[in-house]
Image (cartoon, rainbow, N blue to C red; front, side, top):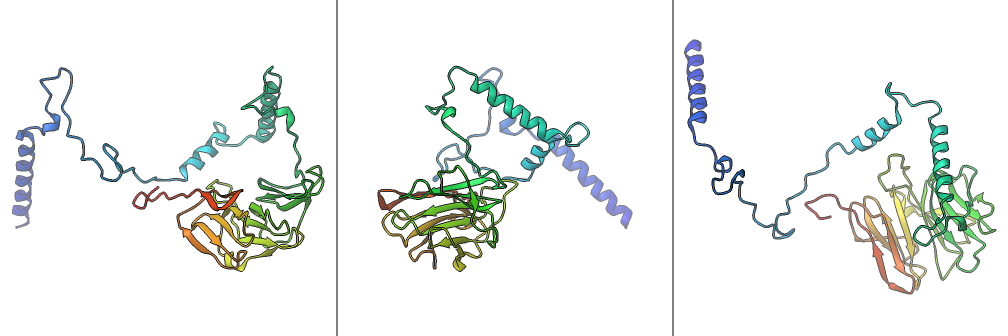
Length: 294
């Protein structure tokens, strides 16, 4: 019985192969005799009622970590190792590149002269500086937020800096804001949400009500891992916006005690008020699910 079954399946397979060979070629493979050296193609898909004609649905990204893997491969030599003096060589090349451009007759770029800028720190382990706020009434006083160094303050226009508090629950400061009407009211958002490979996670938003002397976490934001930007209304000090990853744009009308989510999205990089009208604001959202929108 088993022998007969095997023969039966073999016969069916031969019939299918023969049919495939004998069958005429599909229309889209038949040469177009009316146009030399051209083959006819299948008709274009019907226009998409939402995205318009001839725009297909993009494929989802696969293996997003491969970009960082490729970047790390570039750092390695043919033996797969990073040279011990690679950092020194890279810094020397950067310095040579800067010296080259400074030696050019026209050093301006988009109307900005590099000679007019001076590095002001922080230089004692400040970390990546993602944010900077200046006191609206006293230009000598400013604060900087470092993603691996916490909150820093200068009272001499940036000539010297000092850390505000090294013992905050989280030192990954990504954003800062100060109220234009009440300079004693400041906010600091924690956690980088820009998908960089060396990003540091956060723990919500800190608030200061005494001009940046003391900072306290807002319990309503304790589960926010990435706060990319904060904006305070120019008209109402109690109202502020926050651009967050995995949440979108959030809004508070009670100095951060409670929040609404007027524009939910998978992320937001930026939000800002019109400095002359608190009813106007701009913001960015990130939504990489094509079924929802981009």
